[in-house]
Length: 234
View 1 (cartoon, rainbow, N blue to C red):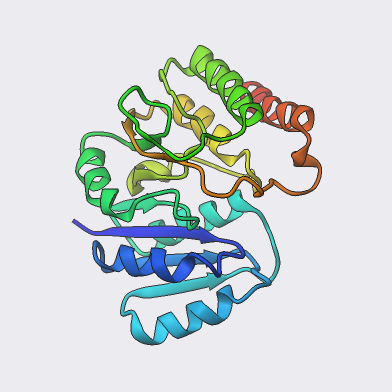
View 2: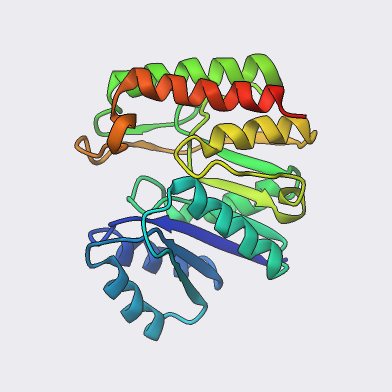
C-alpha cells in the first residue's frame, strides 16, 4: 500500500514546522504545496527539506488558491502512482495522529471525508462563527439534496482518496469552493463516499477568506454558482 499525504500551505509560518513534524511520525511521503506564501513559510520548508527525507515541496509563484493547491496535489499523486492520498490543512485544526485511521477507512471507499459536525465529533475551544456555520449548513443541505451523500460537513480539508478514483474527476475550481465541485463530480462519477468524525477545533477567529469572499452573501452566491454550474455541465 503506497500513500501520500498532501498539505496545502499559505502563510503558515507559525504552524508548518509542528504539523509536518507530526506527519512524519505517521508516513514517509509528504507533499507540501506552498501557495505563494509571503511570510517565513518558504524558509521553514527549505530547512525542513534538508532534514526530512520524503518531504517534497511544490511552490506556486503566487497565491493561486486553495483549490489549485489541492488539485496540484491530486495530479502529483496520480503522476507518481500512489494508491492513496490523504490531505489535511496546516493550521493545526487537524490531528495528524488520525491519518492512519483515514488510511484504513479509505480501503472500503473512494473518498473518506472528515466531518467536524458528525454526531461523534468533539469540540475543542470556541466553535466557528455562526455565519460560517449557517452557510455551511445551507451548502451541505443542497449538496445532499442533489447527491444523496448524507454529508454533515461539506468543507473539511481532512480527507482520504483512492487515487484511481481521482482520475474520474475534472476539477477546475481554484478557490475555496473546490470541495463543492468535488462533491458534485464525485456524485456524477458514481463514487462511494463516507465520513468519519474529526475534532472541531477553531483556533484563529481572525482568519478570513480574503477579498470579496469575506462577505457572506458573496460566498453564498459563489458556492451556489459552482453547484448550478456542475448541474448544467454535460
